[in-house]
Amino acid sequence: MAAQEEIRTVSPYKRHEYALALIILGLGIALAIVGNVLDWNQSFNWFDETLHFLLPFAAALAGCMALYGKSIMGARSHPVPMVLMIMLLGVGLGGIWEIGEWLYAQAFLPADMLSSKQDTMIDLMLDGLGALLAGILAVRLAAR
Image (cartoon, rainbow, N blue to C red; front, side, top):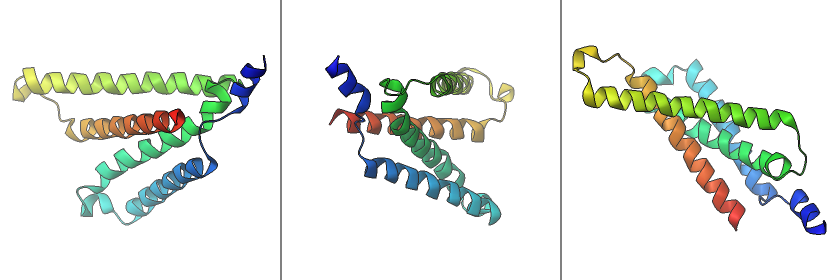
């Protein structure tokens, strides 16, 4: 029983790691707001793609760090974080499905049958790449 209690109260992440993830998320949100006001999407071709990588990376990393000890490890079981994690898993799987459909269409459909989803697919792929990188980083930090 004592070992189980120890597991329930220990988070594998240090406070400064969580703080850094929150700072990156805050900077990403600020960058998105400033970029929208100054219309940087039109001025810089790379700006939208950068945000689609940075924001999911920071949000997934901070979210994982916040929920790992509390919900995933059972320190404080609550249904809301579990519902959100399951919902986000479903949304993520839906995004992966859309990317797969687009890749299939690019490879096997005639050019005149393709719909214009280029920007959406690039955004979804970068969203997924950012979240994947956050997951890998979170697991590595937790395993130390």
